[in-house]
Amino acid sequence: MLKKNRLFTPGPTPLLPAAQNAMAAYGAHHRTADFRALFSRVLADLKEFIGTKNDVLVLTSSGTGFMEASLTNLTSPGDKVLVLTAGKFGERWVSLAKAFGCAIETVTAPYGETIPVDEVRAKLKPDIRCVYVQATESSTGARHDVEGISKLVRALPDTLLVVDGITGLGTTRFDVDGWGIDIIIGGSQKALMIPPGLAYGAVSERAWQRMEQTKSPRYYFDLRKERKAAQKGETSYTPATSLFAGLAAALDYIRQMGEGNLTAGRDALVANAEMCAAMTRAGVEALGYKLFTPKSPAAALTAVASPTGIDSSTIVKHFREKFGAVVANGQAEMKGQLFRIAHLGYYDYMDTVGVLAALEHVTAAVTGKAVEFGSAVRAAQEVYARASSS
Ligand SMILES: *Cc1c(COP(=O)(O)O)cnc(C)c1O
Image 1 (tube, rainbow, N blue to C red):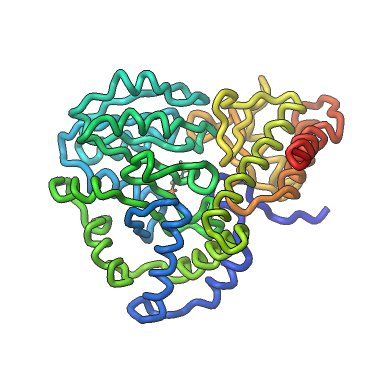
Image 2: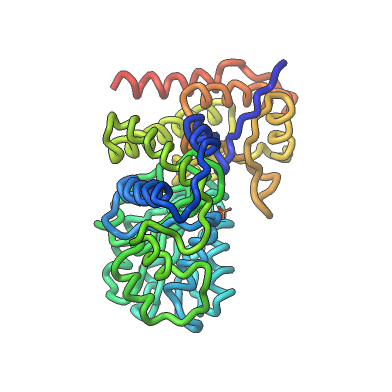
C-alpha cells in the first residue's frame, strides 16, 4: 500500500501547511521594517501564547540553546543549583550546570516517574541560586508538578525557577506569572508546528536583576543583549527569518482555534493534546500494553513500555516500514524498552485513531499473537464519545 510519511515524534512534529507556505514565501532581510514588524508581532503573540507579561525572547537555536542561556545568564561558577531530574532532559540540565562550573544538587526520580515534591522541599535551601526542571520529561512521557515546585521555590527570596517547557508549552496549563516562573523555555519544533531552529522563553524581572551580578561566560546567548535588540524590533545576530514567518502563521492558526483569541486558542490546543493523549492511553492499554509512566503521564506524548521479551526497536521499525509512521524509540539506555507517540501541536482525531489502528497490526506482527482488530481503536473512540457527550 501507499505510505505517507507521518511524524509521531515528540519533536520535530508535523508541520502546519500555512506555516510551510509562509516560510517558502519569506525572503526579507532582517534589518528592515518588514522584518521588524514581523518580529515584534511574533514576540507579542508569544507573550499571549505563554500567558505572561514578562519579556519574551526568541533565539535562533534549538531548545538547548535557551537551556544553556538559562545557566550562563543566571549563574556564576561555583553557584549552588538544584536540578530536578527524571530522564534524559533532566540529565541535560545536570550536564549544562557541570559545563559551567555550578555546584550541583539533585532530586532524582527513576525513569518513568515524576519528581517527588517532598524531596524538593527537603533539598531546597536559601543558598540555592536556581532550580532547574522540565515541565514534561519527553524521554519518559512524565509530567512534573511545576505548580507545586514553584510554590516551594517562591517561598525563597533569592532562588530562581527555570522550567524547560519545550514540550510543556501548548500541552500543559501554566500560570507563569502567578506561579512565579523566572524562565520558561519553548522550542519551535514542538507544539508550535514549525521546523526546528527557534527557541523562545519568557524572562522575569527577578531574572533580569540576577543577570546584573552573574559572571559565567556568555556571548551568542547573552540575554541582556537580545533584550536590548528586541526593544528595537531586532535580534543581535542573523535570525532564521523564514522560521519567524512560519511562527507568525502558526500563531495565527492557534488564534483562529480560539475564534480570534490567542489565549483561548492556546487552551484549545492544550485540550486537543489532552484528548489525543487520553485516547492513546486507552488504546494502548486495550491492547495489553503498559504505560511507561502510568502515574503522571504528560499530554505531550505517551510513552509505552515494550512487552517483555520484545525490543521496542522492532515496533518502531514496523511502524515505519509498513505504515510510513515515525514513532520514537526510547533514548539512550531506554532504547529498546519503550516507544513514544506524540500529541503535541498539529495532531488530530484522525492521526490518533490512525496510529492506534496501525499499532494493532504492528502488535500482531511483532508478538505473533492474535489481536482483536478494532480493540485499541474502539477504546479510543469511547474516550472521545464520552468527552463529546459531556
Ligand atoms: C526537544 C526537547 C528539548 C530540546 O531539544 P533540542 O534538540 O535542543 O531542541 C529539551 N527538553 C525537552 C523536554 C524536549 O522535549
